[in-house]
Image (cartoon, rainbow, N blue to C red; front, side):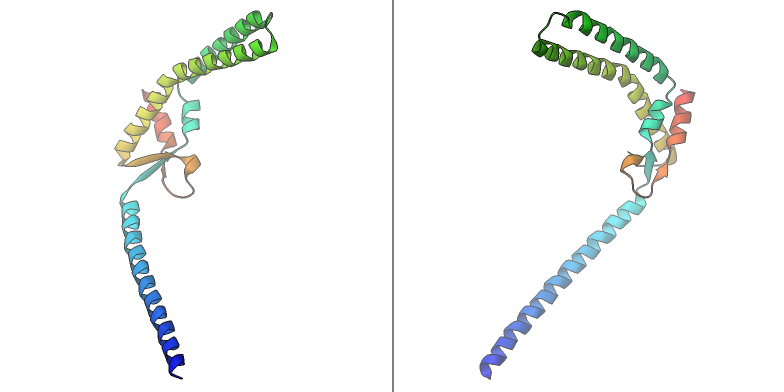
Length: 156
C-alpha cells in the first residue's frame, strides 16, 4: 500500500507541475496578447486597392500607349531577326526580347508608382494613418482610402 501512495504522490506532483507551467504560459500569453491588442488599437491602419489606383492614374493611358508601341517594336524586331534562326536561337532571342519588354515596362511604370506612393503617403498623413496596406491582404478592418488617393492624384 505504501508503494501505491508513492505512485500517487508522483502523479499528483507531476499534475501540479503541469498546472503551474500551464498557468505561467497562460499568464504570459495574456500579457503578450493585451500588448498586441493595445498596439493594434493605437495603430491606425489604412487600406487601398493599389490596382484600382494605378488603373485610374491620370497618366496611365499614355504609359499604356507607350507600352503597346514598345511591344510592337520588339515583336517586329523578333520576327525580322528570328527568320533565319534555329529553334534554340529563336527561344534564346525570344527570352531576350521578353526581358527588354519587362525592362521597358518597369521604366515606364516607375513614375506612376512613385506618384501613387506619394499620394498614398499624403492621404495617410492627413488622416493620421500609421500603416497603409493593399486590400488584397486584408481580411477585416482598416480604413479604405482608395478614393481619397485617386482624388489626390487627379489634383496633382
